[in-house]
Length: 69
Image (cartoon, rainbow, N blue to C red):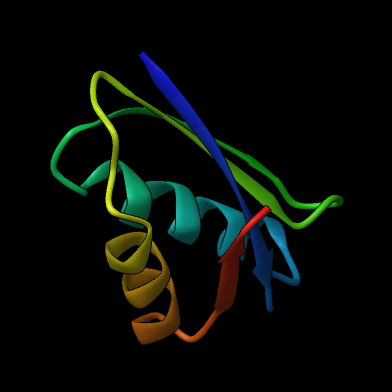
């Protein structure tokens, strides 16, 4: 199992955190997502490596800035 942490900028409330969690949960191969609003972090767990560019692109299309932490 692979665990990857992303720094997500632009989340300002619980609604944003839920949006990020739901968005990332829909990506193929992602098994679980935890979002820490206060820290501005999203942690993905997957059975295989997930393409960082795909994760960042999905978050940016939703209006957030993201990078692998």
